Amino acid sequence: MTYEKGALTITNARFTIGMPDDHHDTGVQDEEKNWTVSDEPPKGQLDLSKPYKITLEYSAIGGEDLTKKFQVYVDNNQASDKPSVHGSKSRIYNSAINQLPEIVDDVGTLVIESEVGTANSFIQIRMESEGSVTLKSIKIEYQE
Image (cartoon, rainbow, N blue to C red; front, side, top):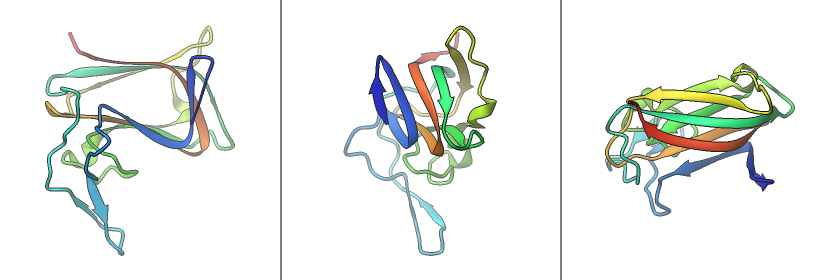
């Protein structure tokens, strides 16, 4: 990840919003690649117990492979949709970067509406390898 001129470019990386540094892993994977979800509930700082929306503004997509996925998770700090108290519903957005809404006048806007969450949630934003997205802003708010 790089931060330059007020924008964050994500390539083969992920970051969380509202997850404390000492948060437990939401799941563990065994040698056969099977996931076990943690018994501990999420301990995030975001109250996502009511319907909410996440608005992401971006200024560029790129990389070697534009079919790589841009993903948003709730209460999941792993790279799979399985290790979460919400199961596969934890991945609230999953799309190839070339399928993101069009960039118009230097800004693309992605709006994700969801009801997946708890009173102690956190968000993870992830970009697969060989692709990149440059974020200008992130807004999380309740739906009206």
